[in-house]
Image (cartoon, rainbow, N blue to C red; front, side):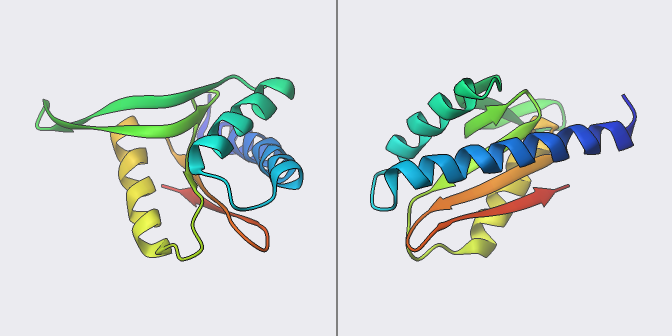
Length: 128
């Protein structure tokens, strides 16, 4: 698959994921724990036909040696990493750094930071 095709695939996926996020928020609103949103988003992703996994573990490598692990909240279609938040005061710089590191470790190129908070769910797309 060419890089352009990968970008299109990720764009289509993130569009569908965004729709799923907004549907979950429409149904639940704000105020629940992150775990509730995670499970609800998994239900919605499955409902719209997207393959997704929760709590996916990736090794962090240094010179071919494993030096740590990270756990992504959700990985969709083995292509998009989703980091979920349910906080009013989120440090977006830290969230961006976190998801960039997740993408580096996983070898994936696209991530979404999703914050289920009042007055609306917020989504930021990160590409490395």
